Length: 103
Image (cartoon, rainbow, N blue to C red):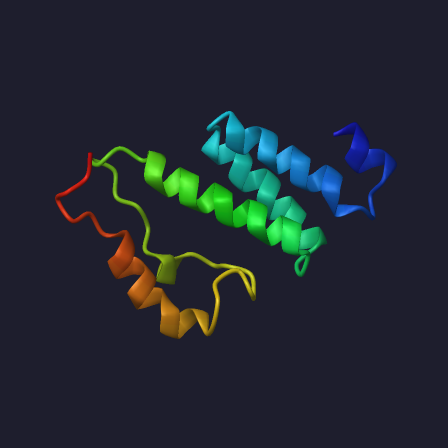
């Protein structure tokens, strides 16, 4: 938090702030922190990559009895997914669906 206060125009402090919550598997806090980072630096590649990692890790950590929202239901910043997000979302959703061959 100190880096964000001392250097508010630098995305690295915001990225580290989000990454700490992601590495702690604190999905609610990580979502809040990455949302703050994305609002402040919507086109920063490091912020987009960090938020993408958070989304992937959070989705894979959800127990099977709790449904994971479809990517078409999640608002993603421009450029987070390659290509046109609305067109790509169904294919990504299909790829993330359980196949029965999970560990």
